[in-house]
Image (cartoon, rainbow, N blue to C red; front, side, top):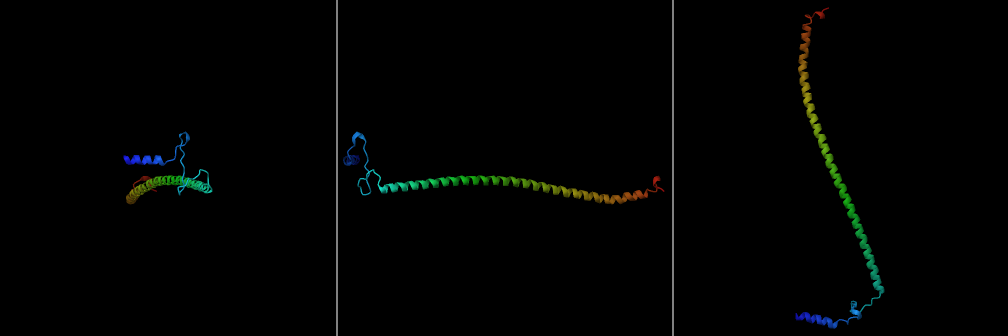
Length: 144
C-alpha cells in the first residue's frame, strides 16, 4: 500500500500546475520528449491527408466487400433454385419412366394375350369352315 501512495505522490509533484478554471490541458510531447504545438505543421498536414486517403481506400474496400457478399448471396440463391428445379425435374422424369415401364409391361401382357387368342382362333377357324362346308349339303338354301 505504501508503494502505491509513493507513486501517486510522485506523479502529483511532477505534474504541471492546474490551469485556471479547473480545466487542465494536456501537453503533447514529441518522440524526443519536447512539447509539440497544436498548430498544424506541414508534416502533420501530410500525415492527416495520408490518413484520410487510407480511410477512403478502406471505405472503398469495405463497400466492394459488401457488394461481393451480396453477389455471392444472389449466386447462392440461384444455385439453390436450380437444385430445387433439378430435383423436381428428376421426380418428373422418374414418374415418366415408371409410367413407360408400366406401359411396356401392360403391352407385353396384352400382346401375349392376343397371341394366345389368335393361336386358339387359328385352330378354330378351319374347324368352323369345315363344319360349315360339311353341313352345307344339309342346309336347304345353300343348294343350287
